[in-house]
Structures are given as structure tokens and as C-alpha cells.
Length: 475
Ligand code: NBP
Image (cartoon, rainbow, N blue to C red; front, top):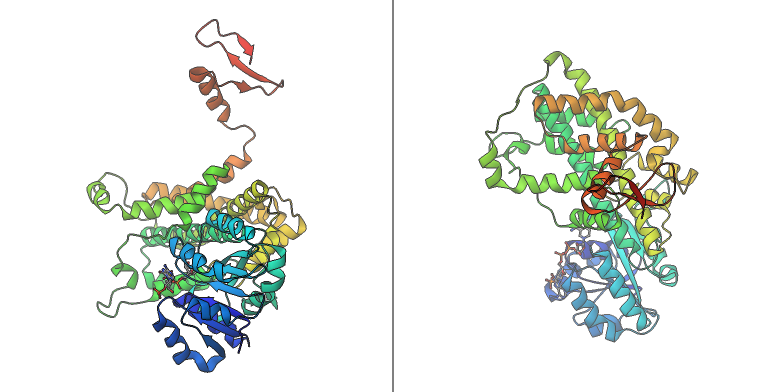
């Protein structure tokens, strides 16, 4: 029996993706460096569909229909290169390798270029949804040649999540485009989680609400415009009680957030591209700060307020926080989509942001009701300069504004850190300004470094002779 497609790398993600493919009627060749995983897959799930187990890369490749389609689901980085090095010599021109790991998009560009030389298609594919998504339908973000997508795209669309019958999978663009948008997706996920955490923290500190009370608040929020997977699971986590101690689960978890690195990559790349993704950056730094245990212990007694708000204001504050959360979230997504637009321009990817919002509506971790609004915004104007310019988002943020400002002010007054809410509001206010203090910065740069400045009333670059008679010269 020959297989329609192969999966090599059968840890949680690869195994579930292979099962998803088999459940959809594809014959799936399965392979893993360590044979035990392959054996276990076939023993435990062989009844779900047609699997062709292979215990060497040669047998694996030999079991595939031509052109061969191989999904690689191994640890990102050196393991992916090792697998490609083993696989590529066994393939022929026209065959394709789909890397579903969390690769850095620059690695994907390098691998795609090298394999293209040999006539092999390389499809760098972002896959979101975790273990369960891989099995039941993830959001899939493939990048690579149109020819490769024509061959493997329909299979990926079949196993992807569906929203209103539309698959959460689209050809994102060439070479590294798929992994780039997956990276930004993860960055947005960081920002989203940070904002949720700030909302919880402020409400808990300011109103004295218990985690169980706040679980109910998030459950309620999940019935409105904030409806999303992350809000839904926030209610679950806040409502969970530790069996060993009977305490709220959130109180027995060490408060040091970890990270695997995609958020950091997003910020690093944003710095290179010059795109302000302040929401994602604050989220990454907030996790870093939480991890500095020794420094936190040394600074814990620094003076500052630790107060509670007027208990009578709890209901209003809760509604204010809900609105601030939505407004800040819109800013974080606006920034992420700006970063995608900038990369698309820089690398010539021609990414359709509306199509991307469409495939993030289901399957992935940031799936949310409001992605439909983002899809509609970019469909109405594919060149939208900022999501905040879309009439719906302009109106939502305008209506949330008073609440947003009260939340940031309340947090500052009570001494509760809200870097996500505050930076999102500052970003919004910076966009609104007629004149920014960047003019003063330009003046300072010209003073100490003769870096020159441009004038509002004339073209050209100018320099003031600061240490001379302070006359102006054209540079
Ligand atoms: P892991 O990231 O834990 O990787 C384990 C797999 O990599 C095993 O199959 C292992 O084989 C294989 N492997 C390693 Br490690 N080194 C290898 C090498 N030198 N040669 C061949 N195989 C090697 O698995 P995962 O959590 O299933 O994730 C797979 C990919 O999907 C990763 O890139 C991950 O970032 C990405 N991803 C994960 C999630 C998630 O929720 N977990 C979500 C989205 C994307 P062995 O069995 O022989 O050790």
C-alpha cells in the first residue's frame, strides 16, 4: 500500500496530525527516529484509519505516492535540519517537505532556498492549536510555492478547523511567510494573555474578588464581544481548586511565567522592521520580570500604595476593565497586523491580512469572535493603514476610552502594574497626536551629534550651529 502523505516526528503534535489525516481518509506513512513511538501510534490508533509504519527513512520515503509529501513534526532548530538532511537525498524533484514545527522564518527561508536548488518544494507551515488542535482541526499557515500548495494545500485544508464551513488554512505566501505569521500569532497570544492577566490582577487587588468570583466574571465576558478561547479557559483556570490544598489553583502556581521564545522572536523581528509592537514587547518583558525571583525578593518592600478601590465601585470597575481589555486587545492585534504588513512589504510576500484573520477564527489559540471583525475590516479595505482606522474598531475604542483611562489611572493609583493596558493606551494616544515630541528628540540629536533635522515648512535637511552662532545651515 502506498501512502498519500507521510508524517515524520511522532511526538504529541506529529502523532495527532497523523491521526487527523487518517481519520479524514488519507493513507498516512508514519515514521519517528525512535521506533517505539511509531509502534505505539499504530498499536493504539491503527484502527482509526490507514497507517503505513516505517522504521527507516528509506522505507518511509519508498512508501509514499509521487510527488511525495512529507510532513516533518520534530523539535524546531537543529533537529529539523537533521531530518531534512536525512530526507532530502531520498527525494526527487517535485517532491515536497512540509515543516510543521515552530521554525524561525529565517531558517525557513534558508531551507526553502537550499531545497529549491534541488527541485524540492519546502513548505514552512505554522500550525496552531496545540495537541488537541492537531487532532481535531488546527489553524494551518503554510508558506511556500504556489505549485506545492496546489498539491498539499487541499489535504491541509481538509484537516484544518472549519468556521462557517471555511477551512482555517490558506496559502499565506512564499518561503518564510507561513512561519512568520505563526510567529506573530504567538506574539499576539502573549499580548492577549498578558492583558487577561492584568485584568484579573487589577480586579482582584482592587475589589477583593476571589479567583472563583473572577471565574464567573470571565465566563460572563465570554458571552459578549470578548468571546474567545483564551477568555474561556481563563474562567476554567480561575475556577479550578487545587485538590491537595483546597486553595484556588492560581494561588498555588509559582508566579514566574516561562516562554519558549516565539514572543521574543516577534519582538526582535519587530525591532528590525521598525514596527512598534508595544503590546507584545510588554508581554515578553512582563514574563521576564516575573522570572527574576532574586531581584523581586530584594525589591518587594519598596514603598508604594497597596490599596483597594472603593468597594462600592466594584461593578463599575469590572465593566471598565472589560472595556479596557477589549480596547487594549484591539491595539495589540492592530500592531501584530502592522508587523505582518511590514514584513510582507520587506520580503515581497503579498500577505492578505483579511485571509489571515479568517484562518485564525478557529483552531488556534487566539481564536476569537472579533477576528470576524478584523476579517471584515481588511476585506473592506485591504490597505487599511491601521486596524484602528476601521469604522467598527474606531467606534469601539472611542466608546471604551473613558473606561480605559480610568482603569490605567486606577491601577497607577493603587500600585497595580498594568504594562499592557497602559502601553496600549499610550500607543493609541501617540497615534492621535498632531505633533509628537519626536521634534525635540530630533533637536537633541542635532545638538550633540549634528544628525540634522527636517523642517515643517521647507524640504531638505538642516543643521543648527549649536556651538557657534546658532544659525541654521542646509545639510
Ligand atoms: P517536540 O518538539 O517535543 O519534539 C519531539 C520530536 O522531535 C520527537 O519525534 C523526536 O524524536 C524528534 N527529534 C528530536 Br527532539 N531530535 C531529532 C533528531 N535529531 N532527528 C529526528 N527526530 C528528532 O514535539 P512536539 O511537541 O510534538 O512538537 C513538534 C513540533 O511542533 C515542534 O517544532 C513544536 O515547536 C511544534 N508545535 C508544537 C505545539 C505544541 O502545542 N506542542 C504547537 C504547535 C507547534 P524521538 O522520539 O526519537 O526523540
